[in-house]
Length: 215
Image 1 (cartoon, one colour):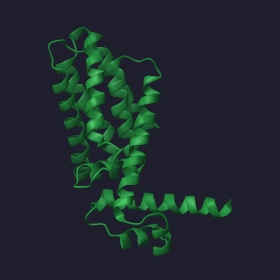
Image 2: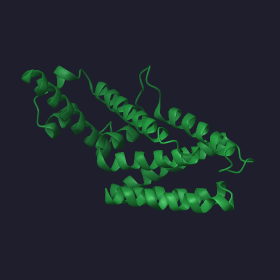
Image 3: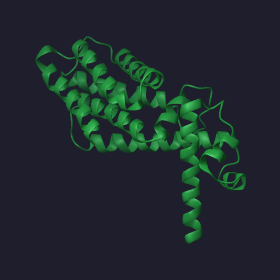
């Protein structure tokens, strides 16, 4: 049992080290030797768990997908409106990115030429489908203007959100990300939400940002 626990801890250490390096210097620029040194393990320990760098990338993408699914399930269990679910999910993803290198690395892997192995789907595909469902619900609930195309809204949101995260990585500390997500939503709310419903969602965006900063 103790040996199994040590093996699990070593595996987790390797994954975290790889994620940190993939995020900071990119997948292509990171070697297995870099990961061994950063994780402070032997090459034998690394190869015991992972045969190739591609395997590490796949595990990071899988862990990120699982965390995103868990986040969505938790938010949806609250019985919120569709637009609130969408907002809470984006802030939740931002919080995960602030706290953990795995989501940060997963985004960088998703924007690089790293193959996503089935049955895992590309994260952007899942995000687009999720956003489309929630915007459809938001139109039905009269929280979003009915004349807007939900597919276009979903694509714009994902592009805006991904772009915000990529730009933030280059320009400022990751801790600034919740503020950028709040700014994104303040802009989107003005264009998407009927005037009489805007105060609720503007207040929500501010509240969600504050919750992450004080957590």
